[in-house]
Image 1 (cartoon, rainbow, N blue to C red):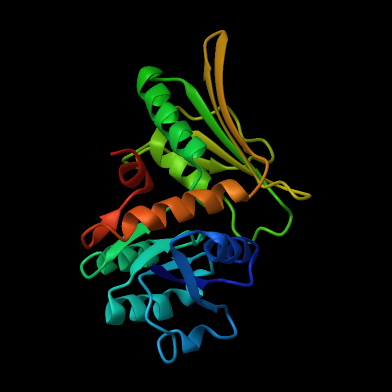
Image 2 (tube, rainbow, N blue to C red; image 1 turned 60 degrees about the vertical axis):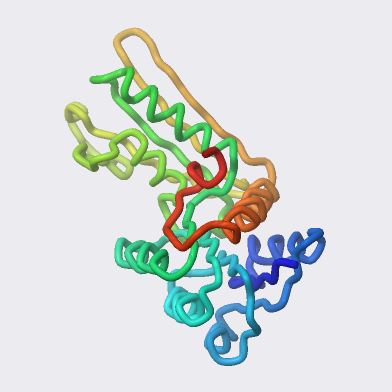
Length: 240
């Protein structure tokens, strides 16, 4: 039986993950923590085989302390993380199997592959990335949009324009546009458009339910607990 702790248990994703773990054969939910109880994670939390974290970056200090002490695997889906946060997550791979992803959808993983291929195949084309989410989402751009940006520009060499306003003039060569829409109850839509001379290519993924991210996180947790310590990416964990 795989023992699971969920961090961010009261949030939209955390509550769905908690319910899925409780219903999953071979998994046992042994604890759930949120912003008001996160300080208890490293004090009274029971032993677990894996932590699934869909909370906020502010919880990372407590999560990291628990992982270092218990060597539990970590599935992190927290968005809005900084480069320092990512460095912390990578360092946890020294003691436990760890994965971080801004999106646990298999469809988005495929979109990322297609975007990378299109970008390599269409040099010189203009690229625009657009993401749309519900009106309660706290961070922008989304973690998925940032992953798609890295798929277009792996080395981070191209200028990025986060929206446009006023007399902006001609589009600079190599610029990547990034746009965030917020409204209603949208689970998540991501579109990457490539504009060439007299032609256009658009790749879109639409999530109609957060359950697809839950399913991906549960699948990742099952695989991660069988791995050696290290920092894994979702594509490698699921497709290799």
